[in-house]
Amino acid sequence: MNERQQAGWGPYPLIALGTVLGLASILLGASPSVGMPVAGGFLLLGALIRVILPERRAGWFAIRGKTTDALTLTTFGALLVFGGLILLVEREWIVGILGFIRIVG
Image 1 (cartoon, rainbow, N blue to C red):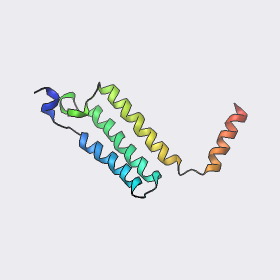
Image 2 (image 1 turned 45 degrees about the horizontal axis):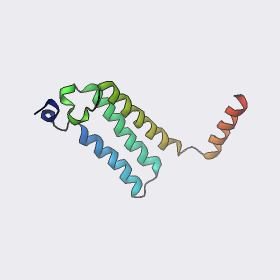
Image 3 (image 1 turned 180 degrees about the vertical axis):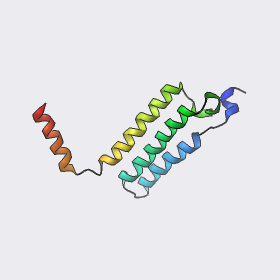
Image 4 (image 1 turned 90 degrees about the horizontal axis):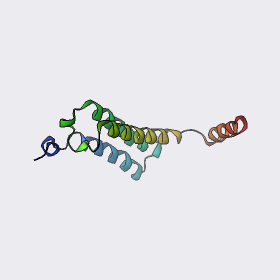
């Protein structure tokens, strides 16, 4: 048995469950502005756990190097949280900001 098999699943089920909960809430009728940040929050939690846990306890959660895993999870998690929260912003504000950037830029 290799080291990864001995460590078991590690925190992987927690992260998978949280992500599935966020996506399932959207499929069951909740607003994407709720479900996306839930899924993203669990991915951010996964990034934090990946940084904290030693390599031998990460289990199947350790795919690549610790830095690569943490950066990947942080990027996707932050994008999901941002994407969900941006849905709460009124469209006129976004159009106004983009128009201001075009005028100034």
